[in-house]
Amino acid sequence: MKDLNKNDNGRGGYDLIVLGAGSAGFSAAITGADAGKRVALAGHGTIGGTCVNVGCVPSKAMIRAAEAVHGATAAKRFPGLSGQAHVDDWRTLVQSKDDLVATLRQKKYADLLPEYEGVDYIDAGAARLIEGGVTVGERTLKAPKIIVATGGRPVLPTIDGIEEIGALDSTSLLELEVLPKSLIFIGAGYIGAELAQMMSRMGVEITLVARSHLLPGAEPEVSEALAEAFVAEGITLLSGLSYDTVRRDDVGVTLRVIQDGKPVEVTADHLVSTAGRRANTEHMGLEEIGVETDACGSIVVGEDMQTSVPGIYAAGDVTDRDQFVYMAAYGAKLAAKNAVLGEDHRYDNAAMPWVVFSDPQVAGAGLSEAQARDAGFDVKTSIVPLDQVPRALAARDTRGLIKLVADRKSDRLLGGQIIAPEGSDTIQTLVMALKFGMTTKALGETIFPYLTTVEGLKLAAQTFDMDVAKLSCCAG
Image (cartoon, rainbow, N blue to C red; front, side):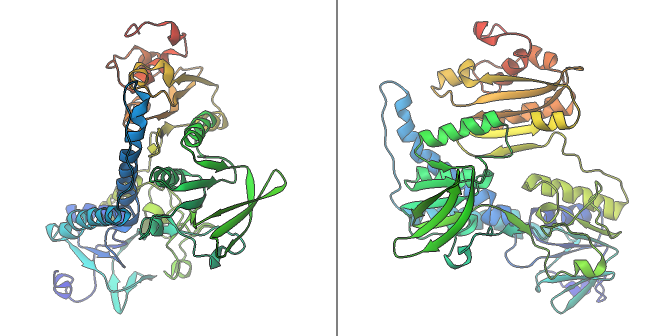
């Protein structure tokens, strides 16, 4: 580690201070250093932030493991095949996940710091903003520009008794030393959907509880298709309800909900809450210096990533912007360039892709049908079920569909969503189509490789004007 006093001339002065050493913080610090600026990167706790430590990396590793278990059973889709797999040693599986996390945290975060001479990493305690800088433990740092990237954390919903039952969250679930027999998940957004299916495929009896429905942010057709897939795998879905109470006794945890005016009780070994997150903004002095936050504690930023206080920017999960690691890094890079180079980059998520790593995978980009109508477009839509996509037929897996949304007047694509086993890789083609303003006609006339899931985008584009069920293979 560098001699911090020597590097800042003993005065605590920097060109840029970045608070938070996760993906957004590293993106901002590296951008500042690449611009020749002196940067203080103030971390607190484990370096690397949410994604590598307790978010994307560990969850996707475990989801892949669950897919391997399920894949043996799913072999029965093909005539003449059968298979079986199960979890032999849960503790070893969890340890392998932890080893992967430790390796990536070291390689992609800790080991990168010596590569940037302009960055001082400071882990001396919680940070607090003051006029013209920040305090980090006993140390005072000064800089004309500050970027807050302190991330977020899971929070428990308001349910009578939930504070006393030892509820799990997305982090502690993946730290269990013993594989449970049963789990209740509350919250059916992308985190709840991914982890509930993963644990079900590990052999755990799952009840997934949602106030509204599964994946409330997705198109209704997509949510319904995923719900059907979950039920087919043996997951119990309870939706359209309100939470009442939760208690723990010798039997386990019992959640009481009100559904259609009637009480319903569900019991399991543990309850897992995936019902929300909150920005890490407490005790940072934001209110005292005038930084605006919303009702969830998230920092409100403009399109330039600047807060309500000139010279103070924010990026990542601590803000009111998109809660995805790649958008956190993107927003932090914009913030750093605007802060230290005086540029005027604007946050643009018009063609932002998002993915739910369920099976089938769910992915989307651009506007949904409802969003497009709310924006004032004269909307037209097309839907192609996967049983019209040759790739799905060959793979004996027709779970899912592709939906496209377009402007009727201009024929320009506005957005789309995919639910398909390979939906996460397919969505990027739609992102490029949206980014460059393609029409449905242009997309439908584009050459796609045969027997790929992405070919379904072409079929969906053609469906605006024809019945693709009447086309022969490769005839489009």
